[in-house]
Amino acid sequence: MDSRDCALELLVMLVYVAAWLCALATTLLPHWLTVSTSLLPVESYGLGLWETCVVQDVGVTECRAYDSLLGLPSYLKLARVLMCTSLAVGALGMLVAVPGLYLVAGCGGLGGSRTKRTLMVTGGVLGVISGVLCLIPVSYMAHLAVANFFDDKVPDMVPRWEFGDALFCGWTGGFLLVVAGLLLVSSCRCSQVEPQPAALQRRYQVMSTDVSFRKRSEYV
Image (spheres, rainbow, N blue to C red):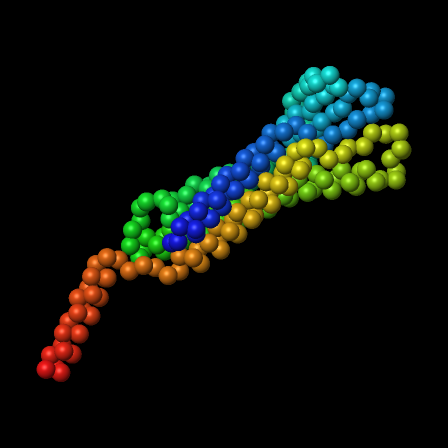
């Protein structure tokens, strides 16, 4: 492979890792949705997958984990499952794709090149799946916030949930996971032309020399 292709391949893997870390941060952040009230302007509340938090204007944050798993709303349970699955699939994709990098030694020969391409494609597909699994719960939570915010049945004085930092982090991580996966799959086209092994090259040189010698002998 060309050195520029190898550098691009390495850059895509770095984006892959950064996107996975964004998805991890999204899963752990307690501010998927936020709300502030006019009655208590010095406090705001955050809703996460694992806990709820109260943030005071002086910078003090108090969080409390959910008491019961069975008592959670269905959308929180679904978001937990999808985000954890996204992290697992993304981590598996990285583990599969790293041995397929052409900067990583091993798997020599023609069969090794095909194996590396297979690993790269598999890692890219897993990255795309991980990104989609990350985008689904983030987008659904945003949809719920928008639907409740513009619900005419809710009085104006009732506090409304709004987008938290975790949603923007999740959108970024999910989008980058999809992009990194697609780039890994498309980068395999750069390795379609497989170099001949040294033994085949030497054999070809010997055959070419023998043919040229025979031609000169016939002319003589």
